Image 1 (cartoon, rainbow, N blue to C red):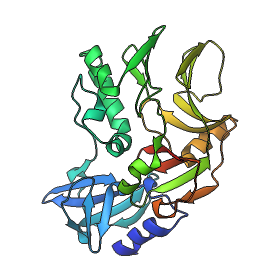
Image 2: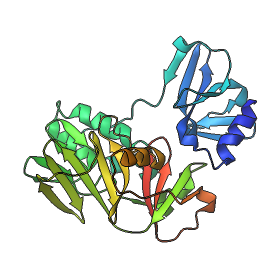
Image 3: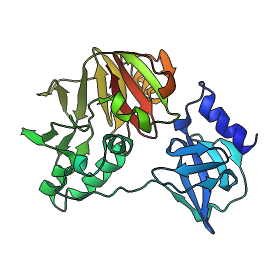
Image 4: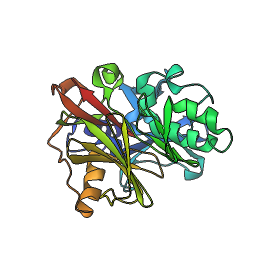
Length: 288
């Protein structure tokens, strides 16, 4: 399989999710970048990375591999010269993230935003909290109450990410070949598990109980209507793909939504749907 064939397979084979793949390419002499496949856009014999307009020829690609370590393409390169990206995003303490970045950028880099904000908490807690948006406090928990991070909670110096669906029309034009998983339309709620407490956020209301819940350890769960939809890893801050989340739900015997429809932006006809868009992080969206 050559480079063009490998790229074509990831772009058009609907049995494969390109979010599971990464690409290593020669950025400049003596340096390679290892990036998510979905962060690349292709134009003939060239590609670009992220929001950069820089065009690289396809022959700069030296490897394409998945999360299991299986390679579609592997040519000679030195692992010691590889830099894994992305690994940071510019934040301004005290300034709401929505004043710096557009909605797609916030959704794409949500995991990095949460990671970086968590690092800032011990330095200046109040200024760090303002990055994520307006918040309220209930008992020992601070809860973000607006924007894409609505439903996120902060306790001590730890952030448990939550998300509210973003309107699909606001981000559609920024998508490329990402897979889109369509589910029933409905209301979502966020369920955090922290030690002996369950924090459920629904319709702007915060409910804290000491009752047991079926949220898997080390995860936050997003629930659609009465069934679990997907999970957020509380360590990496990444929202899992539907396939990854379903494996964990199944292992713990938790009722959850099954994948029925997988599409891309050019074929998204589902009206009144809740969408999970697998980029690198997963973006939760709604199609009205």
